[in-house]
Length: 318
Image (cartoon, rainbow, N blue to C red; front, side, top):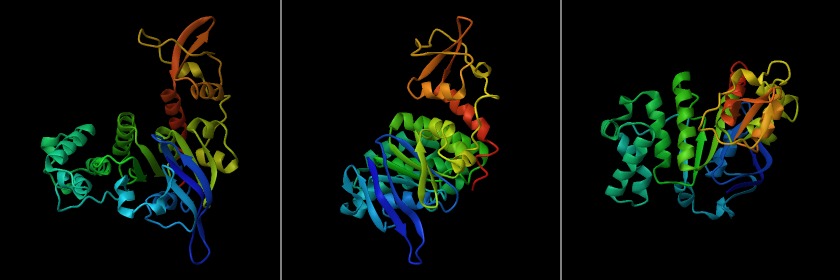
């Protein structure tokens, strides 16, 4: 879907914000760029829609170089959500959402239907919110509108540049949950920048950890947590060895009639590495003790465990 081929961004004084990085983002993937300040993550994001021109290398979208797209054509197919919500204050919520569809020549009826659909999608009652101004909304509500405005013309790609970092913790967690639910519905290709490892673990299909313009490690949350490439990764994620303090039995969910037959069974003594490795293949596992199945574990439960262990470390690298 999106391919970086030895992409570099240099500035006149010789500084390389991004230094010959190569990777591919798959269609429908939630891909997170993360790293300390100045690592090149936001520059990499902005090069995708040509807000920042690259200095060397090539970025492809669907096999076509981004430089071969007419810039408006490129950007109309890429939604963009900023940390600064940037709604037009003099416009109603409906008018804000309608900006790109109007530019693309959609009919008034089609736009109204789309606005209704999107507001309902993020739990904002259309009759209540469509005629309000941004100043009449809370910060969390404004950011929801920012997200659905990026979806309005049904783009294939959504770029999100630290979209939740300015919000209070409760609003931020709610919006993270919303975007997870939304992605299950819309299956867009999302490229998401954050400095918060806890957020990355919660949201990402894959995480690209950067430092000094280079990729340090790229992999699933479980791979990065359990197999850090070096001391920098280990320190950044605050990874713990799973031996002493991990007890699988402590957070098992009891089985019920709705549980599917397991693809694999693990002993209750299994390590965190073993659980994560199995869940990279299977959606859920049943856990056995003394010859009896005592409960189940799934990927989301392990992600929650990771997140709880990152609360103190994950937000300290800003």
